[in-house]
Amino acid sequence: MKGSRFKTLLAGLLLPILILSIWETLAIRLQNPSILPRVEKVVNRFLHPFSDVLGTGSLAFNLVVSIFRVFWGFLFASVIAIPLGLLMGTIRFFHDFFKPLIEMLRQLCPIAWIPFALAVFKTYSVGSILGLRYTATILDHVQLGMIFVLFWGGFFPILLNAIHGVVNVRNIYIEAAHTLGANQQQVFKKVILPAALPSIVTGLRVGLGICWFVIIAAEMMPGSDAGIGYLIIHAYDLAEMDVIICGMILIGIIGALLSKGLESIFKQIPSWQAKER
Amino acid sequence: MAVRVVAVGKNFITEKKENIKALDKITFAQEKEEILCIVGPTGCGKTTLLRLIAGLDSPSEGEIYIDDKKTEKNNVLIGFVFQQYSLFPWRNVINNVAFGLEIKGVAQKERYKRGRELLQLVGLEKYINAYPYELSGGMQQRVAIARALAINPETLLMDEPFGALDEKTRYYLQDELINIWQKQKSSIIFVTHNIDEAIYLGDRIMIMGGQPGKIIKEVMINIERPRARNSKAFLDYHLFIRETIEDVIEKQTKEEK
Image 1 (cartoon, rainbow over the protein chains, first blue to last red):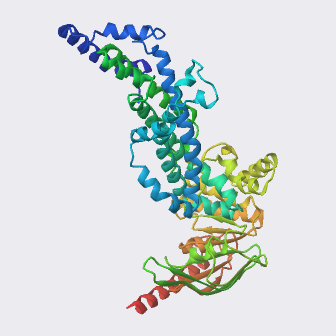
Image 2: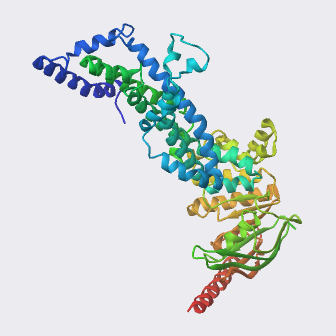
């Protein structure tokens, strides 16, 4: 594809600009900010990220809370799902042992875990687990229940992609390694693991995306006290549409950044896969 | 003796639970430094036999000895060049070639040195840092040969390694292989369905055929190298082997009727 980066950027900006103009026109016509506020009002929210919004804390604060929760949920999901996936992909027994339960749990939307999580973990947060009463920091808002729910969001895509990666390693690579003197352990470390890595990375990316979906929904549910999702649902109760729109745009931007960030971390790894003949 | 195969048979159980005998009472021995070619029609068990020697499968009957040691499954240190491309796509060329040495625990400096020598041998020293997907099919097979030679195998097993290549590349690689063989003094078992290729390369040709696969005939090729494909001797061998294979196929089709 030819053309400068400038042209690409310009082409990508056209549609947002068009939508903004239609929005502004409609807003002026409508004269009802609780349905459609003026663009300027939403922009104003973005320009003051550290000032309080409707008594829920600042935009930045709520954003960091959401990201922090996702980080922990995603981390636990990865740490458990990757080794389990490798195990299930390699050893038949473990596959048969876990598969039925996983197939059942997989059907559950992570949000369905919320009542269960609330009942089990109550309002325990990372702060209270560390023995801190009330730290007035972000730790108070990273509830174990939230992490638990997010765990299920990330767990299955990561697990299934890890299994897929291991199971689909071309047999010829394993056989070639055997003829070159590799034993089972060496085959696992030097063939199965690197061959499965692109698929594992795919799982991580999908998992992180779902975690970001789930946190927003989870924060709208009972038991939530902060976060971008909470901010949006709270703003709805107060008919503050500008906050709602501002929150939605933020969710989109952060989601895209998270995905890009993970992609750039693993940029080198899967490059061979697409080009493999 | 490089490889000794004694009364080897192989049965497979198909998905329909039928017991198929793929190989029956195969016995032969390969001399050291010999190029032994195996030809035969598709489905005669050539590849199966090669996989048994490499320890990728275990024989149902009989024994296989490499350098007078009996083989066991997945524990045979032998050079194997596959028909399909088998280089590890996540490793660059030098790390592919040095894989066998890495497994053995050879230090990086030393295994890169050996790897470079081997890449020089196959004429690819310029591509040390390239990845397999950046190489042509012929180049990939040359790297695969270098990788197989890195472990100094008793025998190099080659399963139609040039089967997927065009004629020109194939001729070129046949000459390269003879070249490598003369320098390395390795023994080679070369499976092919291409009679021309077998006569060009082999000191001896084993013709396989039938269902289950058997050794039908053995032919010594007494032509000096480099061999001319249009010499009378070459063409006579070609005709003889071709007729032998056609006889086998004809007999087999009659039996099936």
